Image (cartoon, rainbow, N blue to C red; front, top):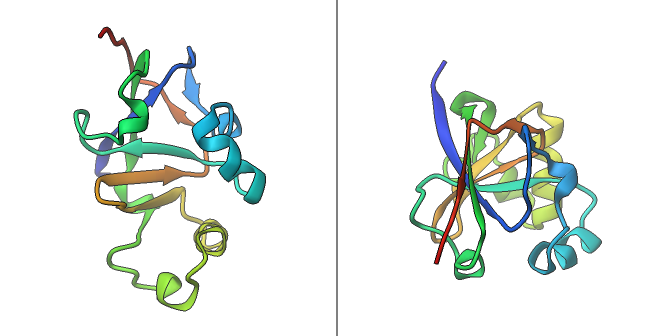
Amino acid sequence: MKNIKLYHYSNQDFRGYIKPSFFGVNNYSGNSKRISGINRSYFYLEPDKKECYFNGARFLYIGAVNKKRLYNLNEDKLKIVKRLRNTQDIYTAVKRKGYTGLIGSNGLSCVVLFYPVKIIKRLTLTD
């Protein structure tokens, strides 16, 4: 089993797990939640490479997931991305195929999870 580390930035003080049901609690993800039916959590694969929206985040959470349980959007072996261009439809198709989430790039290496991930470390960030 090949686990990869995941990095999640937030101002929320989570305990135990990062849960997709928390999706939409901040302004950045709130709009996306309103137009989407799939709860999800976003993670980065490199701790120091994140979108500017998270520059002031109070916490960095570290988790891990089995890489084989993630659908690789860049490889797209099942032609999900090629067949479905809408992000919502891609998330739905990947989840229906039994994947825990997906891995890809939006300019940064990232992971989207549809299920909770256990927090293995929580860091308080300072300016």
